[in-house]
Amino acid sequence: MAKGGFRGGMPGGMNQAAMMKQAQKLQQQMLQMQEEQEKMTHTAKSGGGMVTATVNGKHELVNLEINPEAVDPDDVEMLQDMVIAAVNEAMRAADAYAANNMSRLTGGLNLGGLF
Image (cartoon, rainbow, N blue to C red; front, side, top):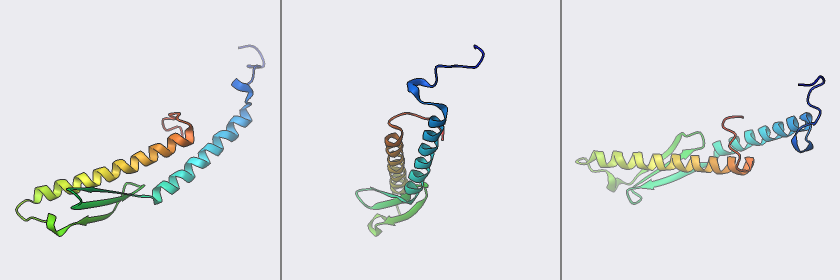
């Protein structure tokens, strides 16, 4: 490289200080969005509404409702399957919400853990 470094500046005329400021702004927005997501809850049902699971944005199960009609002592496996299905669907809803927000914030860029 020539003495004195690259003289052309950053692509599009953005200097390094402006780029760093933009990156810091994006990081602050991402942190704020993450805090908001952690407060959100996502609910899913399975077994025709017999089991309802609610998770928060931290992927914690915060509520589980089981209709008494779903409790059959002779078929515990069915109830277990319904609980698992409801919890997994609620987790997928939380993930989809987070991915959608991240995509909106980054304009569709995949930053792959940059922040």
